[in-house]
Length: 122
Image (tube, rainbow, N blue to C red; front, side, top):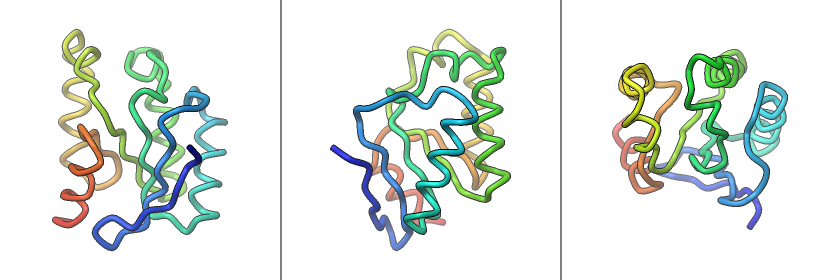
């Protein structure tokens, strides 16, 4: 299944397919940002399963590097899916998720319905 542009609560969201190569580093982020721009997306929704374990280990700085690229290009990022296996073992990640979800740039959400609901409230 290819990536698709969906309008959720009136917001254009590039939704990554569930299968495919993982989002591993800054170059992958730049490629995804370029795809988001080609589709005139405001948000990019990435299934949690498309992220490597290093993304969820904050000490690796993978998450910070990827998120910073999205911030620099003013494209918003939603990580969609269950990440409890990562947050259950990391207080730092749990805090990062909580703080991110308070903002408007990066959200961690359990499913696409939650993203749709959150966009409708924004």
